[in-house]
Length: 185
Image (cartoon, rainbow, N blue to C red):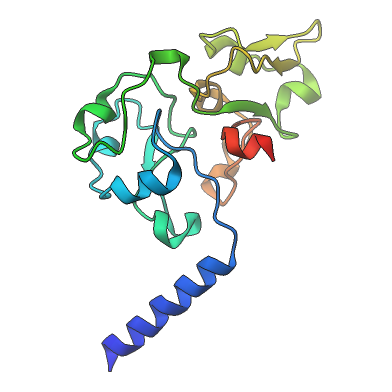
């Protein structure tokens, strides 16, 4: 009886997940197309455990049923160093070799929560950007040079906006990384 209820519940969740549009997730550098990546990834968590900056995290229920436990980039935890360790430990080849820091994971975008856009008093994202993708104007307000940004996410992890609210449900900071697919829409 219990197992039948569990199966019905999972089927209902799956039907609900199909009805909703799948979220666009940012994966570790250089993966296959999403459907091919999902076919190869066995959700072993090796890439998550080996990441020296903890930027690779496991997808959650809110990311969709088929994505649970697959690797996603969580820039609140750190930025990508392009160290290749995740690729070295991937047993199925779901993560592929890439061209170092020239590989583009996503692109940074400022949000309306950015402290510097309102006050000009914060330069954290500019200070940590190794690629000169964050440019400050005369009032010290940032803008993003999308040609230089590779989506490493160091700017997001350094951003102090909403730090205290992140203990609740807030996830978006003053700057965020969007996938290339999401930016095109």
